[in-house]
Image (cartoon, rainbow, N blue to C red):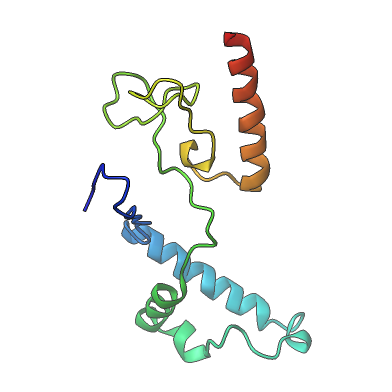
Length: 140
């Protein structure tokens, strides 16, 4: 339940597998990793592969269940505070990370990223902070 009350804990819905293609790709990834780790090159170094058996990898249903039961966040969520123009009613911040409707407040973190980056999110956030700091200095 959404609430503007600051005493109500935030409800974060990560929407894992919100699209069927998400699950299909994750299952494919598990199968690729399984093949690699059980290849002759890696076999001498691998004792167990995430407690997953061949029967799981070979079954669409079992592989999908495995992914659903073992998928989780590493606590670096992104893209939760949409950035966009004034005409976008869902946009939380503008292109300068200014929060709409709250004067003097900016959000400068991974939440304003339109998509998760293919780099370290921490370094990307540092860069974003530096850039927004430059804009803030220029406004004075």
